[in-house]
Length: 199
Image (tube, rainbow, N blue to C red; front, top):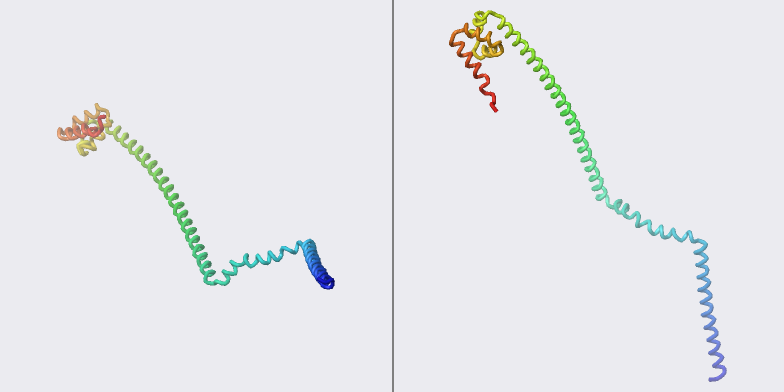
């Protein structure tokens, strides 16, 4: 190979080396500038990511806005739920009112029953007192006069009074009535406690 050819080949190598070196320097310069830009404007690196995320975040709202039929279905469903809740609330209030009225009625009935029991007890006491007084009156009458009254009474009624009287006075009155009347009264007196349990 001639000297001239060698020089041409060396020149090409040098030019190629310079081009490669120039490319490396440019790449390094660009990289350094990019790194400096990242350091200087590091806080501004996030907004593009947020902006990119915004469309995904608002996508469901946009989807609902783009679908009026679906939005209307949701509104109708909410209206039905609200109506059912109102109906349930009204029913609960009605049940509470009915329960309150029932409690008041039960209290009123209990009070009326207690009052009736007291009245009946007073009436029983008064009746018992009246009967005891009448028995005392019959006992203090003459046997013949009392016998005339007992002859007019039904056997069960007469037996009731005679059973409360002193046995000696009752015997004197029975001796003054007719045998038939005395027998009927005696049967009533004997059978008054027949239905009482023996055990």
